[in-house]
Length: 424
Ligand code: 9WN
Image (cartoon, rainbow, N blue to C red; front, side, top):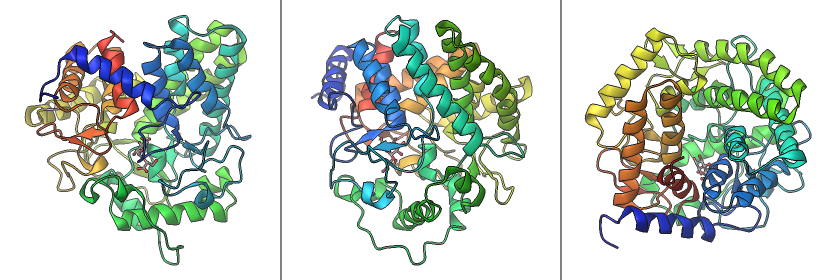
C-alpha cells in the first residue's frame, strides 16, 4: 500500500474492517487485542454501520442493551464468548452476571448514536422505544451511582470507566490506590502491542486493585461511589452524558415517552452545574476533579474540549478553551492530542498521554459544530481524515508526525472515517 492511499480506497478498507470485526450481533474493537464487545466502541460502530447496513446499527445497540444490569448500568465490556487473549477476563471481574460482564461502565455515547439512527429513519416503533428506555435507565443510573452529590459532576471509579485510561490527570488520584496484596496476574496486551505504547505495569497493578475493590463491595455501585478510593470527576464523562441527555429527550419526545423527557429536564440543570464545577481557574479549562481530595487535574486534555458538547459554555470559558486549542493547533500537525504537549507528562506515543484518538475527535468536532464554530470543527475533521489517509485505521496516532499506533484494523477508527466520508 502506498504511503498515501486514496480516500476511495480507504473507504473500501473501512467497510472491510467493519465487516471483519462483525461477530453477527456485536462487533469487537479489533481482533486479538480486544476480543469482546466494548461499550462506547459499540456506539461508534453503530455510527459506522448506519452507512453500510443500518439495521446492523440497531442490533449493535440492542446487543449492548441486553447486557444492562438490573440497576440500570450498561457495563463497559460484555464477554459474549471466552477468549484467553485479554486480561482481565470475566473470571477476574467476578460480577456473576449473565452474560458475563465487567463491573464498571464507559462513556454513554449510546443515546447519541441512537438519535442519529432514529433521525435517519432506521429505527421506530416498539424497537426504538425499548432502546430509549434502556438509555433512560442507564442515564438515571449515572445520576444515582456516579454523580458527586456536592457538585453534580459525574465521576469515574476506575480510569477504564472514562475510556481515556492512563490520561496523566488520573495519576494523582491513582497514587492513593494501594496495589499491595493484589493477586498476581499476567498482562495480555503486551503480546499484541509494544509496551512503550501502553500503560505501565504500575498503572496496571492499580487498575487490578480497583477491580478487586469492586469485588469486595459485591459490585454494589452505590457503595463503589461512596467508598471506592478512586472517585474522580471527569469532564469527558460529564459532557458526553449531558449531550446524551439532550439526545434522549428528543428521542423520548418522538416516541411519546413523556415521563422520560421530564426526567431529563430534572437532571440536566444539576449536570450542567456539575460541568461548571469541573472548571479549573488555574488551568483555564475543564479538568478532572478528585472528589476524595478536592484537587483539580493539572492539564488541558482532549476532554477539556469535550466541554463544548455540553452546550452551556460561557463566553469567557469558550474564549479560554479556544485559546488553548489554538495554542496546541499551532504546534500539533494533527489535532487533538489527548494531553497538552507543553506538559511534562505529555508522551507522544503512549496511549492516552498524548496520541490522537479519532473517536474523541468525532465528539470534539460535534461540540464545536453545535456551538457554531465550524472552522475549529473542520480543523479537527480534516486532521482526522489526513491521519487515516496517511496511516490507515489504527487505534491512535502521534499528534506530531501522524505515526499510526496501537492496534490495527480498528472498528471505531473505521466508523468515524465512514461517517465523515459519507457526510455524517
Ligand atoms: C480497557 C476498546 C477499549 C476502549 C478504551 C481504550 C482501551 C481497554 C484496555 O480499549 O481500553 O477498557 O484494555 O486498554 O482505552 O477507550 O474502549 O477499544
